[in-house]
Image (cartoon, rainbow, N blue to C red):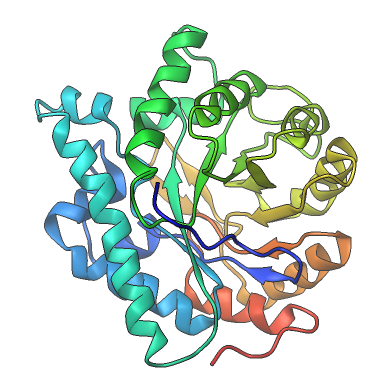
Length: 312
């Protein structure tokens, strides 16, 4: 087991922003079924550049480019599943190198979260946004356990389970994570409205399931419209009963149109900053961004956080 630096939520924190859509904005091709993981093959330096920009913008924690990596996904493409293990390790090494580079610019303490998406992400058909899976519970546990076992031997400080759509998948993750008791994680849900996760269960109920796990360091909401976040913070806090910090990293405010395969609406960084101020006031212990947010959003979040100095 690799020694880890426990992410400290005793103070307010700033998370990073989108990786995949920021890579796309910078000219990388993420159109394949592995999404941002394709860039691990084609342009790893681009990943490093985005992560370094997030640290410079004020993020305390950077996520790895591993959200879509799984043996299942690689096997489906006709690639050896061992390549998925190598990709998971490579994603952490890139983040390590970025953090080391940043130490020459600032003494500020930072962390690495190994990003893991849900089973629906491996299907690359949008199933993570409804959670109606054709997979049994035990295979779901095994899917998550396989990737956790690889990441347990890396230098990631914790795992970020992201865009989780259902209480069943949250329970499967808890069982998988328990096989590696020295590893910590946050678990973040994607939500369909101001009360319920994507599959339909109340967020408060999902938070209650996580609240007793000693390995869960925070309960999150991500890949969700920013207008829903303030109410969802209250629901998560109510369900957790004060046992876990609540973290949020919503989308920019733009929405994806699957028919036209394009983002619609606009991203207003000033409005995002004002909302971040509101989210901290509502009890969020950390704020960042998901799809279509970038370093400018994270700099605005840092400026909006009460009592946090400007990043250096």
